[in-house]
Figure (cartoon, rainbow, N blue to C red):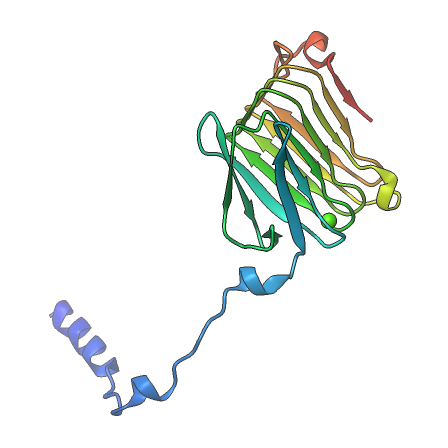
Length: 205
Ligand SMILES: [Ca+2]
């Protein structure tokens, strides 16, 4: 009885579709991700063992992903890399240097292995730097240089599940910035441990 009522309910809501309806109007959806912003271009080069990412004055967004122990992939997120939206692989970079100039820039580095140093300069703008699950043999420097005007914007820096062989220096400039360190190993000391010693190699200015 109940089922029969349900069946009637649904069958009554079926209305005959006029012929040709499905071909009369075909909505097209364009990817918002690609349309949202033309977020400039990042030049990626590997020279002298250092992968260098150089942004422009636009808001650059890019992710660096370690595919294995030696290969990293650079993928623009709305931003082109060397003029292309296609991911690009770089083999055996020992270190990473990023200069993103002005704009609201985002750099995410995931699962990457670098035997050397990581130096990131996001300059002015509302910038986001995130290091996740990386193995970095050298030091890590993250700062906002004044080369493109004094930084007064809120920036976000997060380093999690990452091992750093050297010191970690973070300078986020002006603005209400948020720096988060979680479950990291810095110069052999655990940053997650509730000890002053764990934070000794780190500077936040
Ligand atoms: Ca930029």
